[in-house]
Length: 143
Image (cartoon, rainbow, N blue to C red):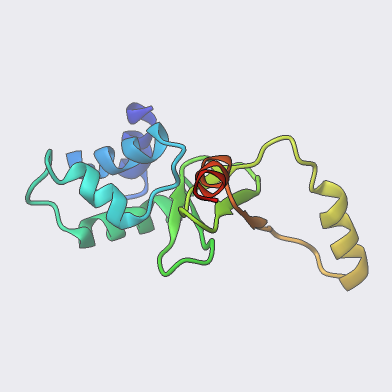
């Protein structure tokens, strides 16, 4: 994985740094869809001189290289996903957890939108909102 990212960064004229590789590694290794602040906090013990600005700049580079997708799931900050395949997400309105949704066929909906609007659809992002099972259990325990 790092070899491909290293080559891609170099081929596109970006400097390869341990911090950039570490930021990408965090994104690939998690399904938590972290914010830039979450990535920064995770890497701070290993890279104490790394700034939050470095995380944001690296994410912008990764976005440019189409190695990460930006999620705007209704919070005050963006979340990031290294899985750039076209898939919806669901966010818990209680704890903020964000999960991938696979196995949901959105092709029919996209075709319907295109037919209704005469737009050529270039991309889409679906977000669903609800209460996750863990928070439902916590709420039931309090009741």
